Length: 136
Image (cartoon, one colour):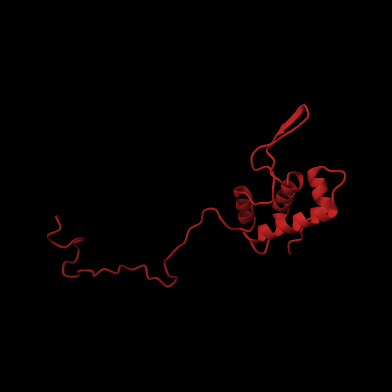
């Protein structure tokens, strides 16, 4: 199955908005998909959550405002709570969804490797495990 980008209506539902600017939402979703594809291509089906998160962050706070005062009210947002970018967690989630990242092992042994010893075996002293002079 191929990745299907979320719609503007899905972004509105994700953000809890009754109305949304469709063209703006579509642009931000397309840009979020492009950013996600810079990490993993093709995008896995489950990447919708990351795309919605990135587009939603940019939709609600495009200028990355961290502190705002209007009249007697002040709003302080956490740093990095706006703008269109992929954070470290977003990149990690995309890689995990694509089956990349995490711990793994690599066995460098060739498939046709022979398990018998490769050192020369001394057959002059049968029954003795070590050659004379090795302390035994």
